[in-house]
Length: 79
Image (cartoon, rainbow, N blue to C red; front, side, top):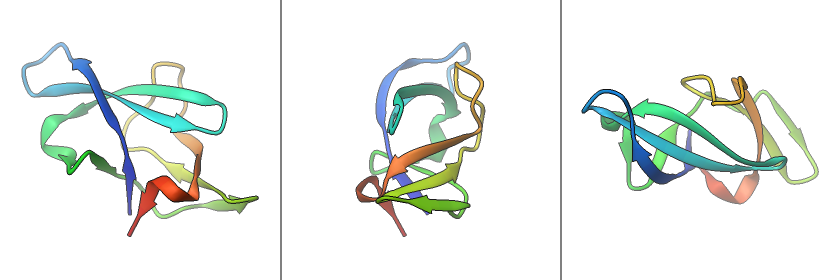
């Protein structure tokens, strides 16, 4: 599964990008390898929860605020 993201900067290494994901609690940012970005989306784990149109997904890396799992709107997740 993939979640839509927005690139917002570069990481410490030339191959890294900082991306933003819109979550139920507000935007979250994390650093990912640029090779994992495809068509403005990022590969995430299969949703581990669902509630009121939101999916709980596991991210490939920890966000700046320390989250590994985030609630996202079902509309930004693709198969």
